[in-house]
Each structure stands twice: as C-alpha cells, then as structure tokens.
Image (cartoon, rainbow, N blue to C red; front, side):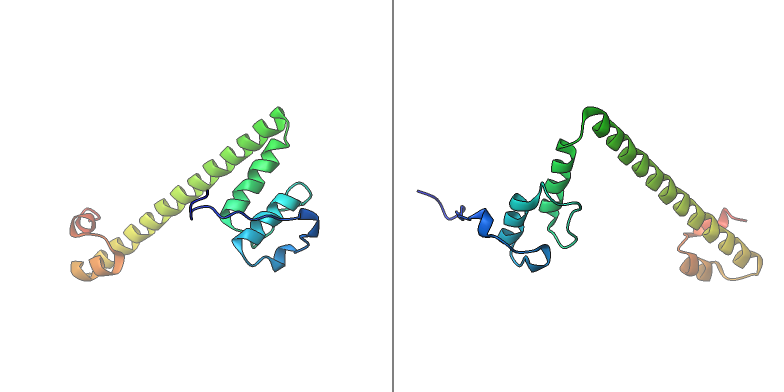
Length: 129
C-alpha cells in the first residue's frame, strides 16, 4: 500500500523520445534526465534547478580525482574573484556617494537634501566636513 505522497510512474525509456524543448512536466524532465544524462554535451537551458544539480553531480562523478580537485579550485577562485569584485563595487559606490555629498556640502546644499539624495544619515554627512 502506498500513501498519497508517492506516485509511481512506469516508463519504457526507449520509447521516450522527447527533446529538451518538448519537456512540459516535471515528470518529463526527470525521465529526460534519466535517459540522456550520460549522453549530453551540455546541460539544457530550460531545465529545473533540481535536474541542473543532478547533471552537475554526474559531471563531477565522471572526473578523476585530480580533475575534480582542479575543478573545485577553479570554482573557489571564481567565487573569490566575484566576492572581490562585489566588495570593490560597494566600496566604489560608497566613495562616490561620499564625494557627491561632500561637494554638495561645499556648495551649501542643506543637509536634509543631501541625506535624501545620497541615503547617508546626518552623522555620516557631518563627518565629511
């Protein structure tokens, strides 16, 4: 006996001939994955997040230990680079905002207007003097 939480689907894989662009249901996507995972050159674009993760796991399973190590190091390097770019961008935005606020102060613009324009609070604006 099965509860309503489980749905059994029986498929004859050789008869399942849908292409990636024809997959309409989650069931179709999983059957496509089961049938084609080992034969695809790239991960299809319009595929669910779960299937994308499964494809990535399969790709890693086919790598040797040294290839897997190299891939993980490459991914780590990319994450570090993205983090550095993000931090530099945030720092640049903050410096630009401070520079604009300082010029507005020097031009005699009211602090309330500077705060509304730049998003800085009163203390931050006063520290620019």
